[in-house]
Length: 226
Image (cartoon, rainbow, N blue to C red):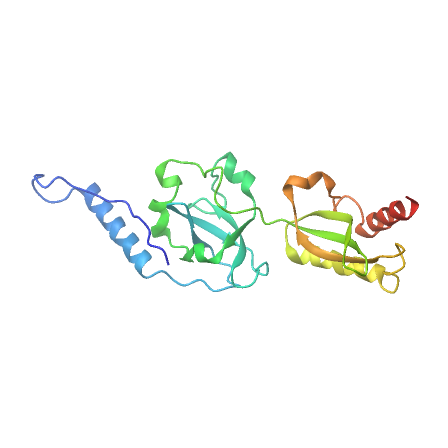
């Protein structure tokens, strides 16, 4: 685990008397934060509680999406304001949505003592680049020759959860069952889950705007009519 830089508090050594209530509160908060960092509660896959993740030199609160894990290395998260889910974090926060987070960026379960380490505590919004790509998914219907060359017949997306994409891929493969090798002569056609390519979003059909099976039939009809 990488070491985190923590804010330093300094009080003038010539200040007379005991600490002021404000100074004492700052010292107590600092000690609590150090203890929380030292004894962070470990995160384990599948837990639905909020976690603490590194975003550059800061620590942020994040909500996990159980069931949307990608093995031990990646999970889907949504960054939250340290004040909680319903506290606005600015325009950029609203646009970020679900993100793919490498699990080595996870410090452990969220602890309110981490709040001083967030962008919000520094009076900042989340940056344009938080170092995590969007966690959106797709279904690609591919036509493959026997030599494994081919092309994509239909792209569906974005889906915001892998199980939704997998469900539609399974459904389309059921539609193709028994005829996948004949719908486009010389090709085998199969539907697969994939990552959504935001830069090529115009090539995707919206799976929520029309029945994916209808979109598949139309795409195949276009191919065989060429």
